[in-house]
Length: 133
Image 1 (cartoon, helix red, strand yellow):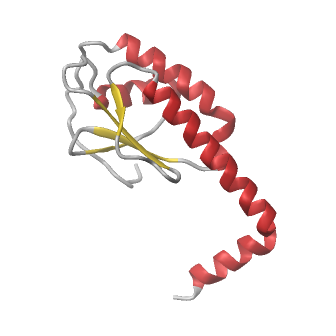
Image 2 (tube, one colour):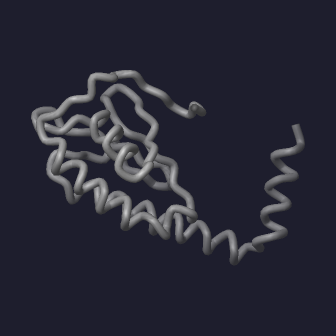
Image 3 (tube, helix red, strand yellow):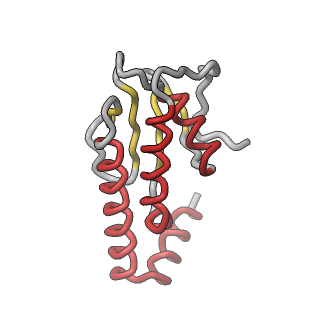
């Protein structure tokens, strides 16, 4: 269909190249902030080497952390939704420039949840990727 091309054209007309580059830069800076927050917590590991706006992370085996319990706690604490995927059990996020204003709050909640969850495992082991509830 031609609608994706029309959407891309409309976005470029609205933002211009400078606007598009600005939003891309903010998105990548936000990704870097998210990566730093994850890497600062012992027992968490970023999966792969994110080059764009997608980040996935897991809990290291033997760390006492559980990725799904962490995802549940983040949702309960601040409404932070992460897709759950396997293998390994991990949390997946797609970032945009719109996440920039709240990434520090997310990082604080991530740290607090990880500290509270040592040794706790989620009973729900189901995954959901790109679903609407």
